[in-house]
Length: 171
View 1 (cartoon, rainbow, N blue to C red):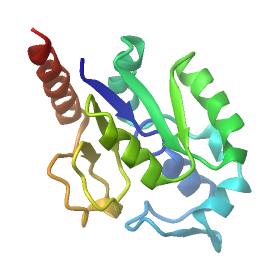
View 2: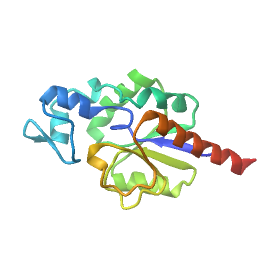
View 3: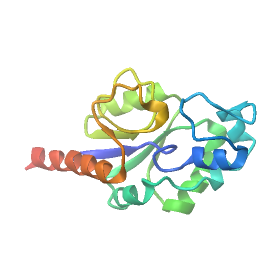
């Protein structure tokens, strides 16, 4: 059975939306950007963004997959962020499966070594976007992704296509 791996930040939780409201400025056009003179990680650590960030516009469309147990959250998070991240997940999603990674390379390697997964992601610097459904944002437009979606309707279509292809293999 095919499954979906959902990245958290940028896919489910909208840290950028919160940080723009908290520090001002516009939506990021590149991955490495600064808020209030701080890099994004330091800025997040000096705010309550991990708890108070809203869900993304994709969130409500993805929730059904965690409810149906065909999706797992996979996120690279510093250890010190994980308690607040778990609180956000519990508040917005209840009890769901989460796998944390210490690096993005480890997360991508995990997905690549488990061929039943497709990763829904927004990170712009993977060496390969095999096994990835990339959600289009200004900061990842240079990523060479064979599957890129620009809205929730097309994201759901790609997910459904992936899930159905796994059912066909098992019949």
